[in-house]
Amino acid sequence: MEAAIFLSAVRPPRLDASTRNRVFLRGRPGREDDDGIIGAITSALTSAFPRRQPIDASASRAIARAIGEAGIRPSLRERRIGDYELGQLLAEGDGWQDFEARHVSLGVQRRVRVYPYAAAASTDARARLGRTAARAFRILEGVDHPGILKVLDFKESERGPALIFEHDPKAMRLDLLLRERGGGMSAELRLDLLRQLAEALRYAHSKSLYHRALTPQSVLVRDLDAPRPRVQIMDWQAGSRSDPGAATPERTSGTRHLDDYVADPAKVYLAPESLQGAAAPASHHDVFSLGAIAYHLFTGQPPAASPLELPEKLRAGDGLRLSDALDGAGRDLEELIRASTNPDVGGRIESVDEFLVYLADAEKEGRVDASETAADPSMAKSGDVLERELVVARRLGRGGSSDALVVRQGEGAEELVLKVAIDAAHGERIKGEAKVLRRLRWPNIVRYVDDFPIAGRHAILMEKAGEMSLARHRPVLGAARDQTGRTKP
Image 1: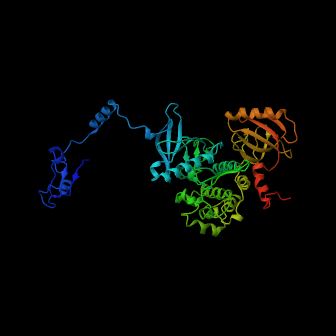
Image 2 (image 1 turned 90 degrees about the vertical axis):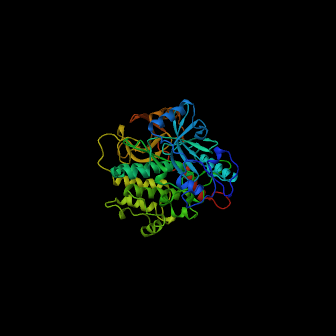
């Protein structure tokens, strides 16, 4: 690449000899002796652009070595976010970029989402970008669940505000996993991935946190070669969160323009009313997305070819019909997907808790012959037998530190709750809880029964307190209030 200057004036200015070689006038276009700008460009005048020897591999190595010896390095300021050095680009969307990053002193890898100021053309636009990043951080701050990608920090930088997330470089997005490995996945594994997603959302909803734009593109799958790959939900930027327990309830509202946050191919997983801006509980949006993802998990294809095709397909079947794309679909699984994707919000599965009840029926329907070996509590389903001959009645779900199951110690025995650490690292916490419960005897505190290791992790067996938690009880109380704010009798 060479520099040239074109002057439109007919008479040339007074220039020194070295500069004059790179300055061109109009010349005589079309003639062989044209010495103007057209001739320079089309004929590459050797007086202005002398030919140079091509750079071969040997010369290239010599240049690189010389640059290194001279101590010339690329500027790190543009590639740094706090103590993290940015690596390859992982993904990008409207107003954000995800990079793989490495801590410069500790070497740990993280996923860094940058909201680049380069995308903001004005001071107001930069301020909006900052608010967007801060909002995304507040939505996830303090949320700690194995099924939710954890945000670790918020950073300001010259490049723009950024969020620091945990990162597994071997993880794969669910849509890519289904495309590359979907054909070899068993029905049991598909059901397990769906259950993990539902349990992570149930935990989020118990914290008044709603995703509102869940798609396979916003789900990471980790430990791909393990017997039980692990899912993590990410991309909560369209979500909402509130704290009903606060003296002055605080709320991080969800955006009204979901289509601005979701690419067109992913919109087929969103509830139709969410794209139309219609008023509906955010929980209904997440239930629809779970059903749409379930459809993809079992058919190997998206719910519709385009967002325009989806509404008609939903109306025709009162929801997505698994049997339209899959022969031999189980009745309970088909009803789970249809009821969760019903276009009529009033006829749709109402909550993730209800979705899990439907899912438990689908798991029973698809169960293969039970193994003689004891089931692992992290994967156990209704009817499975654990160590100590504990029979699983149903799963209660997974929290930040443990799996909870309703179990019986024999036919017709009392139902108890088994709480098992999700891994050895959380075992000490479960041991500490058992130690406290063992000493307590009070009518309003669940009764301790026993604690012991199971499947290599510590567990507590305790009395079942009831069917409804405080988080699930709140909507019931809210529905029973009259316009004055007093609870109805």
